[in-house]
Amino acid sequence: MANPHTLPSNQGEPRTFVLDTNVLLYDPGAMFVFHEHDLVIPMTVIEEMDRFKKALNEIGRNARTISRYLDKMRVKGSLRDGVTLDGGGKLRVDYKMHGPELPITWGPETNDNRILRSVLRLKSENADVTLVTRDTNMRLKCDALGLPAEDYQNARIDVDEQYAGIIELQVAGSLIDILYAKGAIPAASLDREIYPQQVAVLSAEDAPGKTAMARYIKSSGELKLVGRHREGIWGIFARNKEQLFALELLLDDSLSLVTLNGQAGTGKTLLAIACGLKKVADENIFRKLLVSRPIFPMGKDLGFLPGDVKEKLNPWMQPIFDNLEFLLSSRGSGGSRNREPEWQYLLDQRIIEVEALTYIRGRSIPQQYLIVDEAQNLTPHEVKTVLTRAGEGTKVVLTGDPNQIDNPYVDAMSNGLTYTIERFKNADIAGHVTLRKGERSQLAELAANLL
Image (cartoon, rainbow, N blue to C red; front, side, top):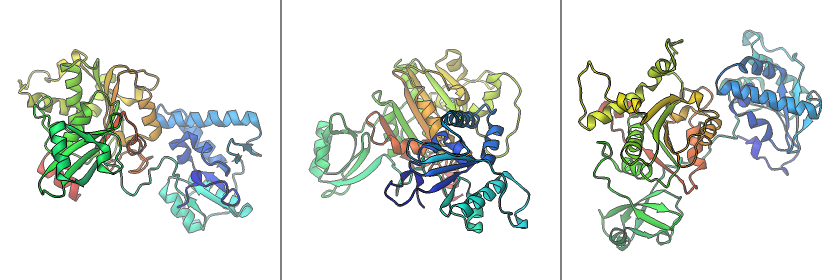
């Protein structure tokens, strides 16, 4: 499928793209990535923006941002006639609400059908018109009507294989011996391109069974032997090599960003919280551990929750409390069922704070260990908002499973977690590991693999 924002200037005449509402709500900057191509926003889309603009969430903010962008363009010229964009193309708002009638079997006069009628009319006026929409059903309807339609690709990661943060290589056995003897080897000895903080699992070509694990440190140009962490972290021990690699990144104070993805039960959140508690409570490297998650229900929402902010957040943050309870039980901290939870003292002493991402905009977060759980439910723009909150000395950890998405505006390849992993794989201060083996229980791993 063509990618409108990457079409070079010398590929024939500029095209005309009609933007659907979901594209603008997903990325308010969508109007500025089509370069020399002309853009049309149907009036129906403007009306839908008006309906969303009062929402106190990211969608509402995006709707208000689009309104501000259009208002600034209106000063430059008439949106009816078209305003020239920096890339050379023109943006105009299509004020005409009528168009060719759709087949009677297409149901009532919905906003989607109004947009389709606008595209049909524009198509009759200009042969090269394409609807850009993130709605699969809209693309299917366009196909039925004989209209070109494309997905919005600007923030979508399109790679043959997602970056896992791990590479397996075969090397000479003597090189592994040097690695164990000196603790590091020159990265140039691999004769293979490797990303910063990527972990190489080395196997000896001439000695079956001889292996080693090393992490690439770009600043020194070396592959450093991965530690075993046999002492455990708050009672937690790595159960597989991916968890060991995750601990290596989470405990490295020189890294400002760590991303962990993998299916349910692989230990992403548990490892992140354990390492955060070690750095905050034991080593005093950070002032506090801040854990947050986006508010997206699985299935039908329960609706209004009574109480103050703390009481409203409790159901959403229960997975975090479950992990804390498991960590404390692993350290031998038990107690009566009648007493308050053992982890309550961590909250009382402000060693750890748990809050929703809803309130993070505008904040500055210095010297903290920030964990964002379920980051696959964030858009790239929302992840950018989170990362730009990080102040001096703050470490950010993003965890999530791209195959368990509750946000209807993103998918496995366009969510903020996947986007961040791909964009930061060349950064010296960022590391990533994909965890593959479930450790929660045999049933949980089977369910994740079979269902």
